[in-house]
Image (tube, rainbow, N blue to C red; front, side, top):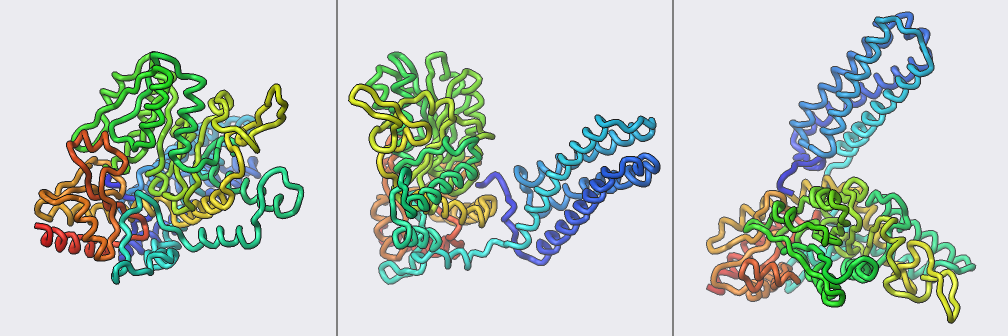
Length: 548
């Protein structure tokens, strides 16, 4: 993402290592100060007998250390969202802590239970921030981004295509699978294969626990409030269709409006378009500028009392644009309009905290998060899912059935008809654990380096035009070459072992906006390298020369 450096973006030079080690020493010192202060809370009388020596001096030390965080953090990492905000919070909390104790102690206020409770609460707030910072620092220093080891985790990267080492730049279409995911699926079929839920025998009960643990892993990853807000689907397309059908059946009427954007994938256009045709509703489209960014002022104007839902992509699969989804959600919620976010292109590159975003629905596919194909996730707020009727019905979705009436199951089962993709859910959870072990911040930083490197190299080639130049981008570069069809270039690149995607990428309205038939798309993942990009650029030059 071009707008941020990140925690994992450590260039392992001597200076960076030294600075990282110094930061760790700072954190260790701060933690000791906090521990000492905590011990003092157990001896309030001692604190009040010698306040300047016992409390005020440690407070001053803590305050100085907190101030010391900011400059080295900015120098080494510049992690606006993950690191600096906790540091600033520590600084403010320490100031409050110092001032609070100073006033109380110098005025010789008596020790009261309320004082001790407030002081203890304040201490816990400071300690929580300190632990967060300490944990992150240790992770960075102890686990550098090891691209060689990461590539070894993906067996397919060792194969050759047309006699050349595979260079896989089609990650926006699907991600490759690490060995741990392959092993999890293999283990399921060798030792766990059984149907989930309601089985009394050992294997059914065992695999039900594993499957529901996978749901809990996804809940934790998205920071959903409840595990039952996580609905397993066949993929992102299936998840959007579920919402369009079920939400639409309950809440959409003739004359209502549904808002999407120009850059949407067909999967986030067709279900809403079909719903509008069935219900007599109106599909409203948010325009974009030439850089591929949503026109937010126009978006605000389009919202009205008739708007029943907004459905937009988190990251464009063609442009790479990272949309301001928090702003989009907040603006809609100000008018009590729910929002669905298509996170299919986002989950492999950035964290999606659904509580922080406050989105009503968030969807993604497992295969783009390096998990199995055929499995996806719909997160939905409990209040909406409880009101929505089942999308498909059958085995697993019911409490009781008679020929006269059926009572449907509670969440999440009422939306999960039939035998689920059991190994898919299990494999997806393993993929999420794998990605989190590397760290999405680290991944974003590394992929940003790849994006910058590729963009700079491509812009130097005569006749190349990049489509999608937003200031906030994920690791996707779509382009065309003047006078040459994108398909022809894709074929010639394939002969060199380079896999890219060509065509309209299931975004024909977006292509119409740019007056194009199609583009070439190179999309990167954290297992790609700058060396691969260099080979790709040279291969593109050869292909252009042949076709010119």
